[in-house]
Image (cartoon, rainbow, N blue to C red; front, side):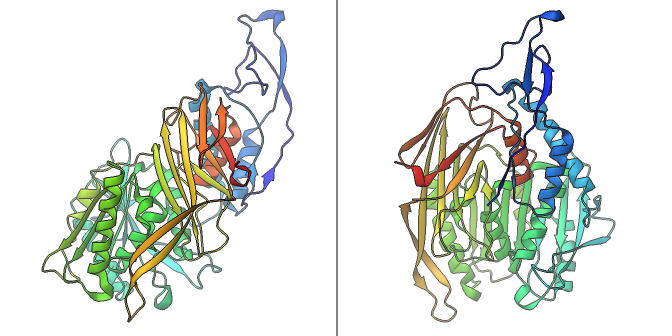
Length: 477
């Protein structure tokens, strides 16, 4: 949970000037004189300097979880210029931060130059992640699609080499590839563990600021152990993704809630005879679950789950990336479903335009499920505690083969609903109803602090939100 820092900031400006699109923080917008001269009226507004914002960003990069709370209202017609300002300051703060860099991409087809990141010791001992980072084809104007490939669990050297060869051959050019090698073996040979989460979030953050990628065309995929990993990551990081493509995998659905995959393209390809660890059975369960979700929410759960007859663990890997590449992310969906599940003990702080201040669930026995629909300027949310129960379990390994879920309304917890012009009309009245109770009706006021905080939370150029409504579930009537 982020702590709140209050900044007391005062500076004078003349009412006839527009300073970075900012306005006086009063109940009504100030009247702006139509001329210059001696009739100008002096007003007082907070002065939030670039240095204050970059300092705050630097603190968040160092691990601070505090919220920036310097308040400065902005005009709705100046949102874009303020977004650009805040994003540029975020880029500046990242460039000043000392860390292993994301190198300039290499030519994936003609060079095999590897780089590496040292991952935090407290997350995984002696974890060094080598990776290839390279492009195929000429860069599109809007940036490359970024594919993140996760290899299987054989010899990590052989699997990494095989992955490079496959990625060079996939028919998806122009594209940019991040091809990591698992840092450690044994119990650490999992792509979803804490240290690897650190790597994925670092990759997303640095790729976004590089300008090399299209932020709406990011895809995670992998084979075998990489299939398990990419299926989990698809549910955990769906709000960043255009699509995901696990192959020769099949995760128990408790580990990868399909509900979270609304708004992305999901491909899962598994051999019909791939019985090891029930991969075929679990892939069939995923197919059925996605079919039910798509029937309930037409158009939101685009999926292509294939159980390939006559094939075991080895299948044709080549159809996945061309299929994924046809899809782009919608960063502003009007329907969001989010089961906030823990992955190696870590929860996400936000998802799409929802940011958690205080979680509703007390422990791992339940999870908080947020469901949001936006219809014009009317926002409806249901927030529930969900309990997952296995209805069929493998007797040998204890693998959950089938599950069912129950839901009860959440009684506590706090969160922000971030808003932007792409989601609602900020110049008109907005209503927010949560669990049947109207918690807000009125006009929200865009403020610089929301741009700063959403940038720090999501580090995503498409998700700098100028307005927000806070919800306290414990105060619902």
